[in-house]
Image (cartoon, rainbow, N blue to C red; front, side, top):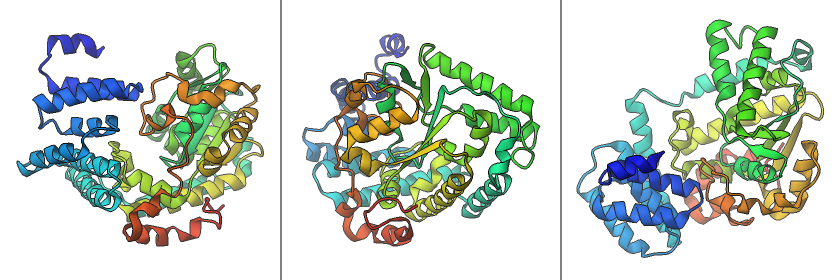
Length: 401
């Protein structure tokens, strides 16, 4: 799709930068680096491509690239999001040099600029509103009896992978999607879109969905899954934020499996903070105190779902267990979704499917554990976050239930 445009407009750095990002998401780091490097040399003020290049270039002269980025910053950058991208690029370069505290300083600047850019557009993270939204969801779905009414469809095709962003949802999906009879749909917006429609037409969630609405949502959703892979027996949807809607999801698909991905809270929130997220819905990730607040609301809502969802509908897995025992965890996942074991699930990193999420690089490599306890690299910089989340960490360093 981009190639004809690239041929028509070879001197358009924005298009070239998009193409570099596409190659990166496809797992071709070398091609992404070559394209991005060419843009940087010809159009050094194309801010976003510096970040793409930093992600693509594992080796290289990081110090020279840092000097190049600093030259662009010194010349002045008008747009806050462009400045944010350059700061994220600097942080990534300093990480490559193992200068973690220096990197953290640039993460702080990058997130500050991004937060300011969102505020200029009227987008802010409202803690009181988030608390109220969580409270309302727990009131609407107060107990197991809410699942005794009409449902949408008994299909077992959907698998909902939920959790905080950066909790291992992409890895979990990649393991399952590597099975020959399963497919990965990535982060679908279908549930969120259905909720917006019901909010406008039915006054959801204060007013419950009608049986007609549940069946219509189920029909449209299954159609979307078949578009991903018509032959697959199971299709995953790894939209992390669907954890907010597990009550509705269970009413739409009472036989669907739900996989809840957990990760050490400090590692989890920090991983969100150091990731160059673009979604306005993740405004909490640009401030560590907001991230801790979001985690608290997520944790208490998941505790509520754990208490009221029908038995056997949800499997909870810890990222730390997956990287420590891949085969054991993969077998547990495959068994939970009702499929026969296949060894291809252990070769998830060889799967060539495009991964359009922040974890696109991690799932191209064999399993590794270097992200466990990553927060310790940043020393006292993260002490406030550690203190804020201490109640949610057990003695093993895993998420306290």
